[in-house]
Amino acid sequence: MNKGDLVKVIADAAGLTNASATETLNAVLDSIRKALKKSDKVTLIGFGTFSTAKRAKRAGRNPATGAKITIPAKTLVKFKAGKELTDTVNKSR
Image 1 (tube, rainbow, N blue to C red):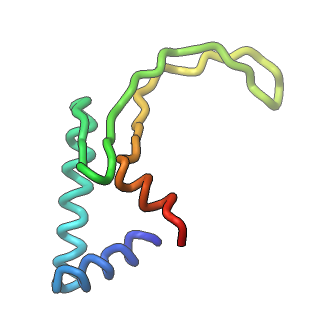
Image 2: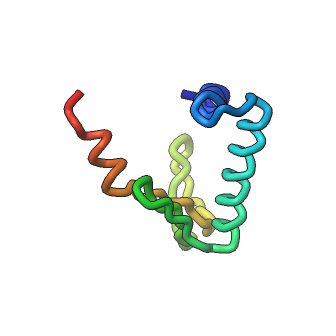
């Protein structure tokens, strides 16, 4: 499922136009992005939690040349699925 498919599902389920569903989905995604940018957690009960974690710089090797390189520090985005989502995915079909 891609973003366009998700917009259609939202529009059908909520009785919205595709344009309204697109605006709604974009607003939700933008809100999640802004919260993560501020290092806040976003918890959607029954679905999961989005959070960030810092990864320190570390030594590595260029696989093509074998030369030592320094991999810069960065912030990772993490997602931990909620119990309800996990149970739904693992339920027998």
